[in-house]
Length: 423
Picture 1 (cartoon, rainbow, N blue to C red):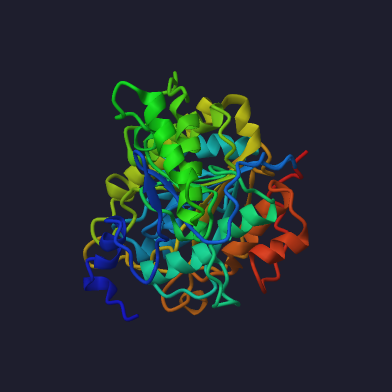
Picture 2: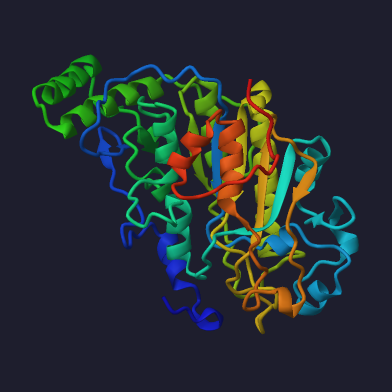
């Protein structure tokens, strides 16, 4: 689609954040008895089987929807072209956190610097989609389907991951959102909600047991797939009703903070989540007054930093059994615009975090920022984001090469050395 970046006001991203479905971007969900959103697809056995016993981390994707500015999150140090291209929005090298004398971190990512030094954070730069369109809709959908060489693919990559590990139990896939993301398209095991009150049956009068039995009998008397989905929704809702939401950790009062707190609550309760998709929920689409040093993007980086650090503290020893990966549909252009903003670009940066990460390093085929090395004015993509995901799934998801090929059809992945083999 055509996209006039300088004047678009990013209506398509505003539409996305309002939860509007377009081109089937979000899959359908079934809201039952208080709002538990369980995907309804034909041909699935909803019996609550035990989750797989294979050792594997909980793979957590943090979707940085809106286009995260990787050049400011992880700036290249000592390059005058960055400062020249962004006379207003660039942060001086002396204000950034030095990682390896070549790359730095934004000053508000101090917790990430600590994780980097403790080898719990690896960074991949100049990374992104193989086909940058600068469209939020198109690139977000493409990222979550992750099947560029197979355009007829209708399932999301996290759905295919759940299939690869043989997961059948409801809640092995979890999205902290009102709508199921495209990454879980076709996943009957995946639930989407942002608050436990949305998925527990409470307003049932004085005789709760009789009400629930009536609901179950209504669904037991039908062989329709919706009835089977209904029974699973009721069972899952009852399990979630007993989950303790007590936490001594203070999270940021942001959408991301609340979503991470919910995720920690579910993990502590033993909810069998194998993979989660957490929407960042910030304001990353900074076409004007980007606020890199202070303002919008600076606040975004602080939100990301503080939310992840709160989650790490809350998880305690469970931190060693999760791997967090951030992904964004595109970065921002090198050249700032006349409104002290940054329009849609291409290459960005990804963070890979967790106790099993081979951290303390930056993986990058750095293309440089000189005009001949840019891609239509953007930081070039020299690494496909699927290399990052495949690396994490291979070592922390404990998958074989064949299983990874089933998740990313037609993609020849390479080992980036981002994670240790799970034990």
